[in-house]
View 1 (cartoon, rainbow, N blue to C red):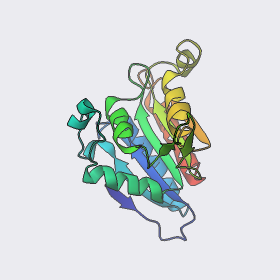
View 2 (view 1 turned 30 degrees about the vertical axis):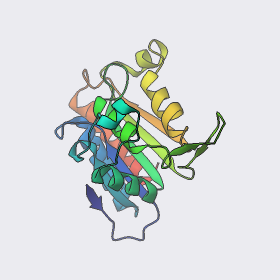
View 3 (view 1 turned 120 degrees about the vertical axis):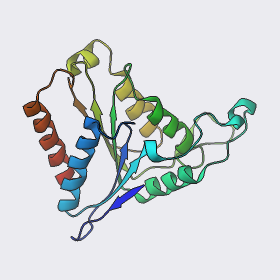
Length: 203
């Protein structure tokens, strides 16, 4: 779990959540571009590299329909999310949606009583993460237009609508980076500059 702060006056609390399992990936470069620009602009920035956290993807309590005990890293992640005003998720699109690593993190961290809470004898719920905003920085090998118009953006809709907004996070903005597979060095640098500009504006 990494923490970075700026020497400037702290004007916004930003948590970057890295959802790619490979530290040599382009997603890590994008996260670094956002972080460096936000710190330079005066934000307080913390970072969670999800692959570094230790938690059980499939705790035995799931099989008995009991609420699983939360591991130390899960509790720390919840504390970091409570602290943050702005959440920045950086991850690739695999098979149309987020990697298993990020989905497992959401399953274990965005729990009832922390991120949301159903009302007794009701279909309605309380959104416990109100007051926070989010940015999704999502890479893909498919052209973004194909992902949107042919596939229907399933991963974007899941993260924005059925996870973050369900828990009260709003607005949720999305930056789609692609096609990474066919990009050259100049295009990848252009995307890094674009993400840096978002960090500079805390967006």
